[in-house]
Length: 246
Length: 109
Image 1 (cartoon, each protein chain N blue to C red):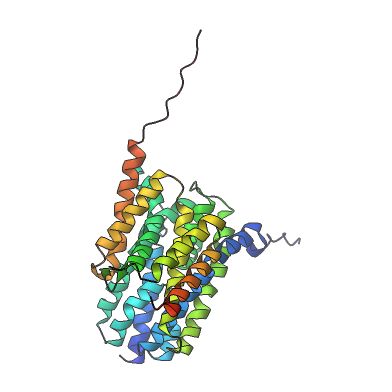
Image 2: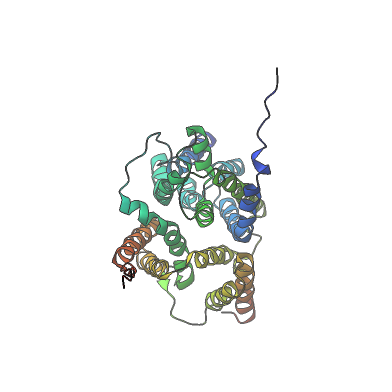
């Protein structure tokens, strides 16, 4: 019997390489944050095997940072989980966006992708494929980004566990992560409505910073979506020139 | 917290990562999202990025900074200038971090 030709492996697809390449710009910022998260885990007093397990399995930096003091303080499990759930709520919003790209895939593939889908993966897929549609090449593009993003986070995170607080805080490593996001933000600003939405989001996030559980991020998203929609709907349509019948 | 409890807590956290990231991807059938929400979703990632960046730049321990002598401000200016000059994110990070270190370690800002 003929052996059917296997499809070429996903990592050979040109979009896989492109996805990885597009992630290289932010990888340094992600690495800086991974390192800091690792250091924070080491300093929290979490037992080393637990810290390694947390880094490798949880793979959600801000939820990890929020859960650490609770874990160390022996908080009830439901409090730890509820906290992480609130910090991760933005991913629920992003998952509605992912659906427009990947709804046609089998559920197992969707779940596998969702688990690895960090913030930057969504931003880059959205930038590369601005019109959300189930495109076959967006899948290798996604995995290419994951192939770079996952180790860029995990290796420095594990390194951070090991070096502990031997890195002086005034080096401002955390700010490298902020700068990566700043550059990414600039790359998404291309018209009046995105600029206004960004300014509104920034103001809302600063004004509601005192809210617990990073809920200011949700307030900022809600405010930006509302303002963006208002602009989209209030902008007058371009006047279509009437046909010249003379 | 015992090791067993810690493992349980972490497994739960990993499940929450999967649960939130797959929330709308899990169902087989399309959930009817209102059209305006679908359209508004394009602002969500941008807003989430800005919501993380803005407080990191203008707040210190939850309060607005009251001085210009803060190394983060020249660092953001340098990063912004680099981005609009060269468009690369890696360069943006390096330029901003270099200026941050110069002002922080050199001038004590």
